[in-house]
Every structure is written in structure tokens, then in C-alpha cells.
Length: 112
Length: 113
Image (cartoon, rainbow over all chains, first blue to last red; front, side, top):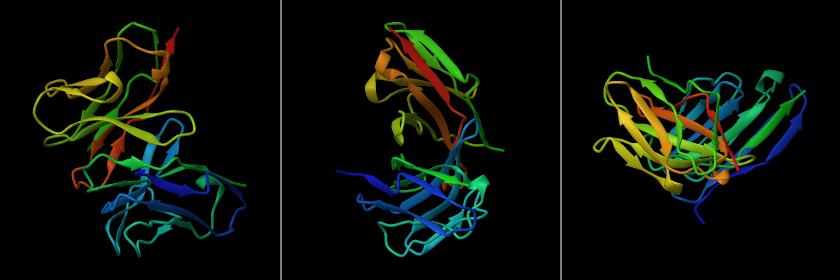
């Protein structure tokens, strides 16, 4: 089954404790991206990757890092999480940047 | 500046009635537009897209959308709503660099039986 898999689904952590949210896709997509969803704000892009080893900032990249060492994986790293990063995070992939996105089921992160 | 607006936070319709979820956009050049649906505790699912061509676009689950260039709108429609259509709907626009989707704030559709 074609899918984007994110883990974990739920995560509660404390300020400053480094964490990684994993994302993997099995569709051989070139493009991958991370979004955060906040009430009343819709979804905003954090980072994106057009291909392996090519990543770039989206609209809200502060406090986040990503890497794209393999085509299928695109982890999101929070080196020092803060409460304002409490949000619902989505990983997505597509054939290219203007193709329909396939979304994972989301990771709900709470930083206390 | 590129932007997407969904003017209604919530739309309420009765089952069997037609539904419309509104979306307007702002972009210089030709827009690439999408509609997505989000069910509780799930990721967004693609419904339909407009790239070019026919102004009436048909998508999944009986949904369609009407592109209107003069009004810069891309409204989502369905002739007969189902209770199972109740969900959060997002309109989105591809940015000019082709690297991201710009999303509206979302519209909650509630279909009553």
C-alpha cells in the first residue's frame, strides 16, 4: 500500500530535550515536506526537500532541522524544543513540488 | 503576494442538500489549486486539483470545484451532501517557486441527518 508513515503519533516532552520525528514514504517520490498545523492558521511549511541531499527552508523553519540522506526518509529534528512548538506535524511527499501531496497521519507534539 | 482565503470557518448543511465550501486566492500568473479533506486523527487526503483547462474539475467522493479566474475563486461543491462528508476542508495554492502549498485556514463542514 502506498503510504507516508510518521512516528510517533503522539509525543509529550519537556523543554530542551532533543527529539526526532521520523517520516518514510514507499512511493519513490522525489519531493518531501514537513508542515505544522495550528488552529486558525491552517498548515504552514517548515522544510522541504526536492531530492536526496537537497533541503531548504519553508515558511516557519526556526527551531527545526531536517536531513534527506535517503530518498524514502525525511526526519524532522527539534534540537531544543520549546512550548511554542506544540503543534500537529505532518510529513508529505509527492512526485514533484506541484503534484498532489500524500500526507502521513500526523504527529501530535506537546512540549511542556 | 500569494495567499488563500477560506471565508467561512464552518458550513452547515442538511444531508441530501447541495454544499459549497468557498475559496479565493491571490497569485500573479496562473494558479495551481487543490482541495484536501481531513478527517479526525488523520492526515489530509487529496480531493481534486486545477492546473489548466476546464473550469469545472471533478474529484473524489463526488466532489467538484469551479474555477473562476475573474473572481479568483475555486469553490468546492457537491450536489448532494452525505453525513460522512463532515470533515475539515482545506483549499491550497502552489507557490510560484513550485516548492510548497499555501493553505487556507480550513472550513469545517457539518452535514446533519
